[in-house]
Image (cartoon, rainbow over all chains, first blue to last red):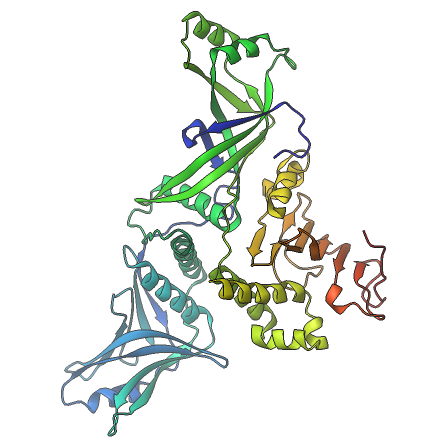
Length: 394
Length: 125
């Protein structure tokens, strides 16, 4: 592993329990965990109360339930989420409209013509995909200029669906920046859980216990592993296990400034981590430390030898990193290539350059100057080819 | 595999100590006949582009794109861009598909030369 080993390098089989470590940049670029429930109020402009009242007044009862979809309508695209709308007229003719999804992950309530929207989230323990879908929708509500529309279909005379669109208000919603940042962190948590789900099949739901620091550390570790395959750890120490013959050799070894120093490569058969009650297996890994000193004293080693260890007995040696040398953990199997991972990369290119991959591919193949002028066009076109090959191979 | 070579170099000393956060995210994508490794955000790297890819302690950064043949392990395409925020840059890349009499296959471009000067062909490595 080491390109220019400065110290004698040892390769050993090992296991997770022999290491203590913390992410080098603890939460530096990691996720934070906020409670999965919250309720707050936002101003919403342009509420069209007449349309809403008409929609209810046409009914014979004073309440009506309609299944449909909430739509974020922008200049370029519509973003939809299935919702149930429940509209009720009180005795004083105040109209209250609730929009909620089937699992009540996200609920929006508008009361009368106050221009106030009550927003309620319940992510905790909800199915992951439903929670993620609602979190993405909310982020769009809070950041995307456009209109919020409720869309429902009525079955016409010949069985044809007739769309009805009711304007709810203007977007983006007014959300304080601190709140918005918390919601983005929740979204990042859910995106992280979804990455883990897609790559490992383990579904982790938004946890009730947001004080579980060990799981949060493990989550940041696992996300680094599956997204990049390389996790640097700040280690305070680690253990190796050696038989009596090797202990004697160590005692006889000439010392560098009075210390035994080594570089280490550890091979681990499997690493797995507990995340909010679920176990995520990452598979085999290699761990590399460029420089460590032996912390077990000569006296301790000699005392162990004097106990008369038998064949097969080993002494646990303690090692400490020199000059804060990190422990690098490498997972060769991560990140995995898949159609989904290629698609995600392609979507990023499309968002940056504002054109579809199909359009770019056509331009590139035709040698169009605009396509050839795309700064990382080669990278984009390679991904398109990779996707074609992956689809053919699947 | 190339990803492992890059890991090996960047995790060893003295190079690792030069890296901010002591690591870099290298994304491989493997198809049937080729694979790519890339490091750094997508889009045009400019003077004011936020650092990504291999980020050094002084804030400068290197973005990497390489395309390798699986069959014979040949390097098919590459593009490397080193950028000092609001300072110098150097970019070298190979563009085999577009090579012509007016368009060299290999390019070296630096901030000192600037975009208005036609890129010059350099010797093949």
